Length: 259
Image 1 (tube, rainbow, N blue to C red):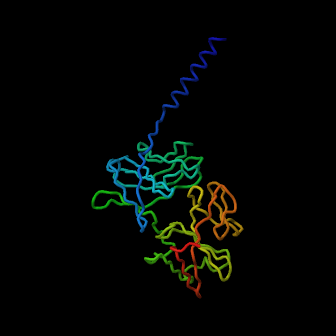
Image 2 (image 1 turned 30 degrees about the horizontal axis):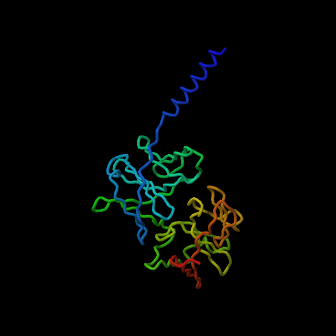
Image 3 (image 1 turned 60 degrees about the horizontal axis):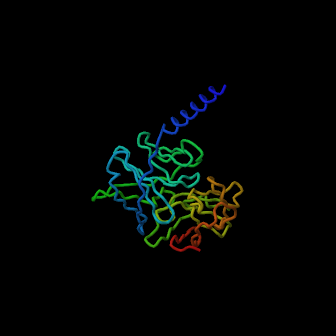
């Protein structure tokens, strides 16, 4: 009986060791890169010149980008896992993203493949400039909103946005100016609010809840009022809210002026 027990223990140890060595994920090298006033991040990293190479780029504002070379195409994704905020890493042999903390997996276009993460990663356009450096556009638009002017003023003709006609109607999209994801909501017949849709906990995208009275983060359950004020943690900081003015059917949002 004792011999059998020792054999079982030994076999269990060998199995655990084999499983632990089945995949070793090397973390991407961490570099820092500033974001310019237009929302561009320029990256000079030799890893990105080779297929499968990657770097983790810390922008200095708490946000992380994961940038990788996929057979000559540069991809740039949200580099913090939406589950618990761990830095993600690139797995070149699978052309996928993995979280080394809890095993979440994502495709190269940001789609979540395996839990515990439940939401997709944000993706960002990346190009290579004349000097061979990678330039990531951190605030790409998605066509929901027109491009703001050079001072950050965004003007909407509400006749073109029927979703904002009723109270509790809203628009969610990306604008070519900080904060990127922007939520615009009609909170009363005479008032439209505009807030950043980036959750202040782990940068997931917030959305209006079913009753229209609050905003909800699908990643970890943080909730905010329609004015961006925190109602329920884990988020501790309010969403950025931007100055708005309504004149007839013209809505102006000043993305350079936070309330």
